[in-house]
Image (cartoon, one colour):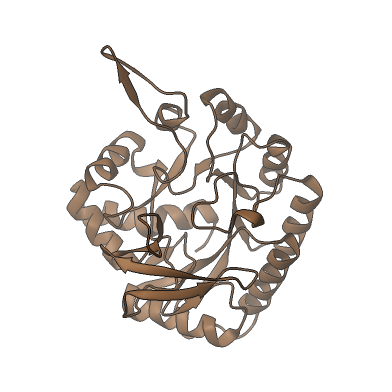
Length: 306
């Protein structure tokens, strides 16, 4: 069975719906349609008080009667301390703050597995160091920093990259035959301390790039994810979902992914983990054992989930 490491919803439900019924339906979909037996509830940028309610809800759910399908194994906070909104609501992004970080860590004691931070934001290094000291994984995501800033973040405890190749890693340019970049792309690939996660749906990242990154990072530094959203498993071409503070936006389903309505801006994956597993074998030529490790073994090891 697979493990959903980076996941925001499915079957018409978002993880921000703090109701047991919604989690039961997501749990059943993950197990029956995605062959997944455990998942982290991912939460995008939102007010800290709201994220604390999410953490408290998940903690209660984990200690309560088990869900009927895949079990809730923890929480992944993809914000609010990020710089590039992507599919998030821009006004909900926040600068890293130690006081807020301590509140989140306390509310998520034992269940908060990963926090995404943009290293270039003022105050980020202290927050990265704090979360790492609490045994919480920290990954760089929704960011655009220099290689030097990334190296400093790693020295402070940053150890992962959120959906690599779908951030602001910067372009690799060629000028008069010389390759160069101002962003952290090459630093991420070269630093053996950094584990990358990649959305392997074949839409967010070209299959050839998935294959190349897997070869560079190797078996112990590559996690395959869905970054699944509420539209996963739903019929229809135009869908509407609320953000964490209730603002409703419209989205289009096309090319096997979710886009902000009437734009070419990708915002969500529609894959389940069994499809990601099949893609790894197809894209990268991995053995079934190595594909399973990227989809289950390594993320479980990374988060301490048995």
